[in-house]
Length: 216
Length: 345
Image (tube, rainbow over all chains, first blue to last red; front, side):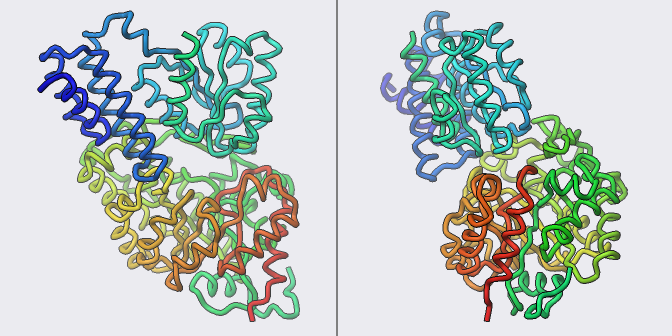
């Protein structure tokens, strides 16, 4: 099997959610001398395809999670073969939290899983997070991106409050703010002054990847 | 609450007739999920979180649906956590604005069904027994109003006991193990439903969140279709299935379950489309939008949406799902007004 066949095989294993297949292909490809970073990129391209399948409702969140698990397990095999520099090429830091007044974390948990699979460092502040805590942790952790989740319409005003507080504290230009969750709409996101509205977890990951590529 | 001249059915008869797809004097109004609001808590003096687990508080707040809003039914189970708490899950019970939620994303932390036992005194645990007692209180106080109980289906119980991520991944790669869990937890759902019927409930809402936002229609068919058919055979009372989100693709399966009624979400789109797919095999309940219409809309917006649902053939008009607690009573009353103005014959 040549390099392009390995890359194709691992990409397909991720798209199909074949956990054993992805892990085994990663092992075989490394033995055959395929660069680990190329394998990671092939799997990332597979996750983009998974996102498209989710969008067209061929896939659902369950299938996306299995694909993410396939990629995650293959990554464990590849990690020792990635240099620190290579690892940095596809990594950013994302801070996530469900805003104060809301204790839902299904959607946020799925975003966290997919971001970790895509190589991001995720700092999850949990649910019902007050604006003050977001500010405090942004100063401490210095994330590239802040992801806010809100499932309840009653907690939407909190998103506006956080963006305003970021401005007052002089942190607004230090962090990209993305939002998602059942209660959030694109119109609301624009009105609240956040940078990007994410329709679903896969889109959130793609947005984070693009943003990190632009700033580095 | 007095009957209007052309209303000859009691709320109980109207609601049950509508659930079973029969004739009614006018469309029923109500919901199989929570309609509790902060306004109602202040009017009744029964607040969350006590109204999740103290029988008198539960009954007091639930009665507002009839006494204050004018709905045809009273549904006293406001959260989705009573069984999970009785099975050992730690629950954060929230406050008057916040609904309860599980403390751990991993559920109970058990994965092997043989390591898990349903407690013999499941029906006597604080949360489950409180609901049963509340139903008895309500049955005694409201002989002419429909009392709707609620039991979480085994899929929803898996989400709580096993955790969401594990349940979803297992639905793809450890199917037989997940089926074992569903088989085990189905008994919890059915026994709790039967106990509520015995306590006086007229009908049972069965939420089972196999929604299009999480899994495919095929997953619904594979894991739940037969389980739901069995529930219909065994519970011995009218059953109302509730699934949030977009469920249009699994409606052809849902209508074959034998459930008497389906409580559906505005994410399904035009209720006329839902009625066409559902055919006449199943009654429909819902589907007024919560975040836009009920929370931020005006009573006239609510009435317009309610009228549209009724024209489409929705049998019981009401919110799509548990409402945000800040919804105004005025908007809920507009649903009843729309139902009263709608001529069925």
